[in-house]
Length: 206
Length: 229
Image 1: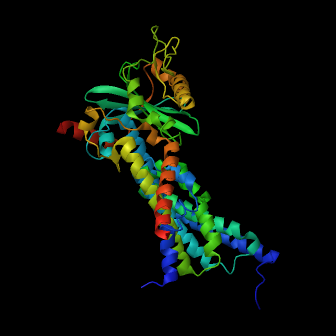
Image 2: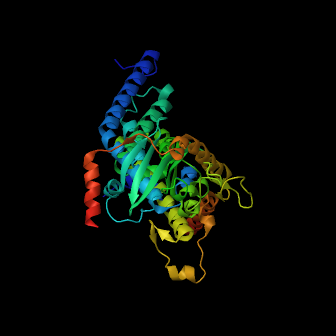
Image 3: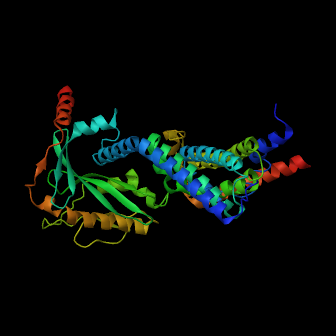
């Protein structure tokens, strides 16, 4: 259905060229919003939508952008989209918007966005740019969800706010791991994901 | 003729057009969604007041529950507002709080019993305190410490409640434990309480203050719910 090239554009960032675990971009927000699964999911979706849309817009106007101010134009596009998403969240998902608080605004500074705009959208057609944005956004979202899954499960015994570990475990002496709630643990978990990812891919290559 | 996209005039015009388009777009979206955002902010405030009243576990629409319980607003001369709630026949006064944390503003609602001394419940909120540390002030574990403490000293003067590290002793006022690892946020809560108690001194120390009834329609709803019980 898709040609090999478009397939690579879309699926590459999910694994072999993942923005978080291979290019080590967007780590800051990956540490900040992964205490619970819900904000991580919303953040992943928000970034995916914004990268894809920003990629398309920049790709559409790429031939008209004056080279000297291209970064500023890219920033204006991203900032406008981020503000739009934040307004929509405040109107339709207020508690999530409050939970993401400053990190939503900080999507503007997420290196993945500027990286994709500068490296891909400036030189590629809108459709390819859209797929590239989608792939990179989802690649980022996957890592966020993995990290948030582990952190919420072991840090609070819950998933998406629902209690997973029964009360009987706590009565038997099990305790939530408070370390999981610290940003430091998120960094260690991202490290573990990178380790697993490299180990698996090296094996595949051989 | 091909446009020279690198000329100064082109760059200048291009940026102006882009910025104007974006500004108009954002302004339109913002004003279209304003009503919904205001509604969310109000609902959030009502939920927080219910939290201070310790009725957060209640089933049903928070706005309706709020209107059924909170039926009076007292406006002080300095512009501060006190909400009066009727919780199972007992009067509770709710004082809105605002202060500063480590990274940004913190706020909350303090619910007092009818004696204007004993704390019934308290709820805190924050803009962006550190998750897992300062952000813990919103958690029940920290908030529930305040319950049944008194904001007055033995002489009956309003002195607020101190938030202090375990082991430290407050002079002349009651105290609760700070969040460990979040010294500045905890101090912020302590300062906020102390400062706001001064702002509410007029209300706390004398009884007559101009009362302002809320809309009659809300009063009626409140009675309806009560009569159903």
